[in-house]
Image (cartoon, rainbow, N blue to C red; front, side):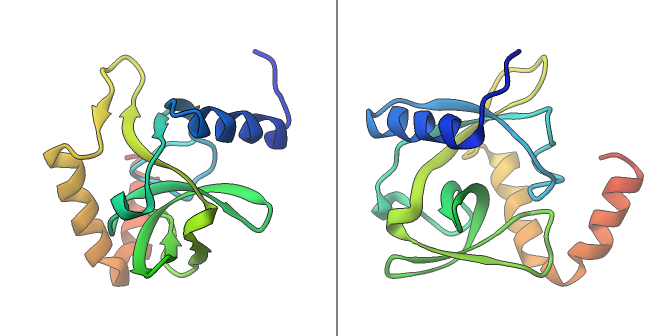
Length: 147
């Protein structure tokens, strides 16, 4: 497999999404753990309209010259506050024009892709969102037991 610089890769991703096509991306980084696993899971990023976005959606967005995939934790008229599932303190802010696309499906190794609107995914996402005060401790347990 050939590695290409992130700026070239994400320029291609943005071009594909602008053309109305979905893109499959391998997850890199730990910020969405335990829901998404670094170097293991893939996500399907689809074009979206700003009025389609909702609280707890996972989006790909531009932030300080990089592309980040995090969950929307607060919305206010074109302003979004984002936070990774594996993060308990820091948040990012972006505007509607910084949103590249919305994650619509998760692809796990040797399993069929599943929609992020599935009952199990949305149920666990909501619970995880509402227990932010104890997330730090749960993350430690998840890492210890490799969940």
